[in-house]
Length: 118
Length: 112
Image (cartoon, chains in turn purple, red):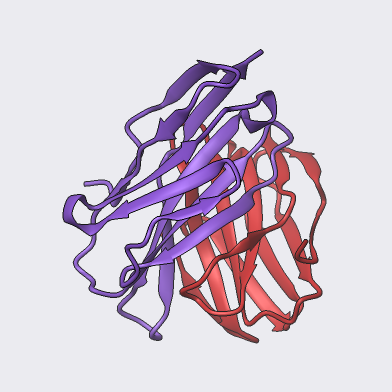
């Protein structure tokens, strides 16, 4: 079973529409971290946000907002008033402890490709 | 932006040849990682390092080896490249293993 599921493979919206990207995760750990990354057409991976499992407060940063709900194991990402520059592949990721060396490993979802049409 | 460079940025090689990709950081971060990105698979961890000369395997380590002789450099070697190793390879760094990783620009490797 996938640890991070991004069910939406591709989404298209018209500029200025709001769009929500879904992320569902699976873990048995009580301490874990969730992330969103953006990969624009140029190919680089850009870190957007980190949330830890003990903090369920929603976060807003400009047009971006994130909704973390432990009850549904979801960490959804909303872009308000989308712009063409938001066109990218967005990855959700989960960091949980591994058995060895007390370290964490990051597991990525397969990504959601967002196209914003002018 | 985190100071991470990868070299080469593009490489075409033939099946059976050895290939080494280099990742260099200027952030003095303890952790370094190698991922590959393939359509339909997202990013998958190949190997990671938690200190100089300390490395461990990731999800897709078969056919790859790594070395880290200095904090700033993490090398990924394909001993005998195969067509299935055609991919985009990303290096990443992090201060702690739990927190966010910062990625290099990627290396596009084609094995013919």
